[in-house]
Length: 73
Image 1 (tube, rainbow, N blue to C red):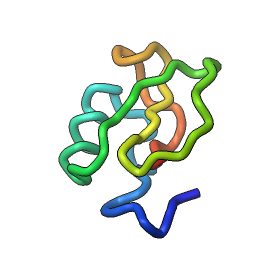
Image 2 (cartoon, helix red, strand yellow; image 1 turned 180 degrees about the horizontal axis):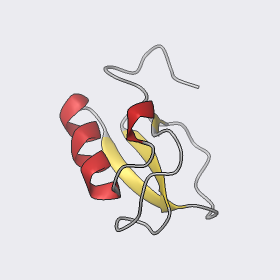
Image 3 (cartoon, helix red, strand yellow; image 1 turned 90 degrees about the vertical axis):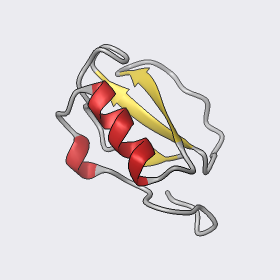
Image 4 (cartoon, rainbow, N blue to C red; image 1 turned 180 degrees about the vertical axis):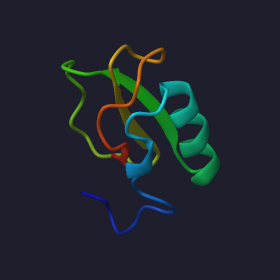
């Protein structure tokens, strides 16, 4: 789900399989209104929706590989 009120790029499907830190740099460069937040696959996250956050699901936090499409939320 992406909110119509959110600015800039909303999803980065091309980053699945990329290193987490590389993904973070690209996301924040392509949409400067957001901050990428790493979350390890299988862990819980807050369910609130925020236009300034992109969840980056990885195998091992910031040292892992992206396993799901990063999206604003």
